[in-house]
Length: 68
Image (tube, rainbow, N blue to C red; front, side, top):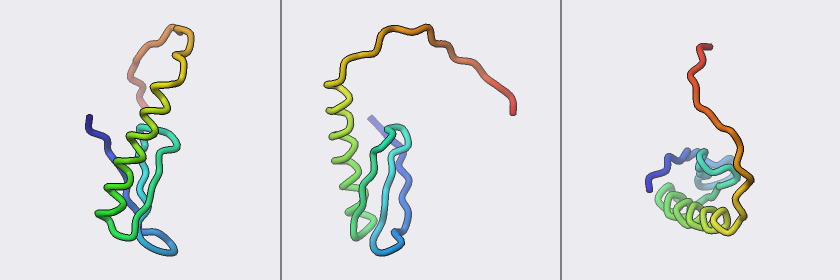
C-alpha cells in the first residue's frame, strides 16, 4: 500500500514526518532517509493497532462533492 507523507525540517534537529491518512501517525529522524524509514515502521505499527480495534457499528455513509 502507498501512503503519502509530509516531511519537515525539525526546529531543533533532523526531520519530522507525518502520515496524514493515519491520524496520530508521526515519526522523526536525524536525516530525511532515516525519517522515511522510521515513518514506515510507524505506519505498520499504527495499522496493526487499528486492525486490533473492534469495528464500529455500521452507519449510513455517503460520498458527495461540494463546491467551496
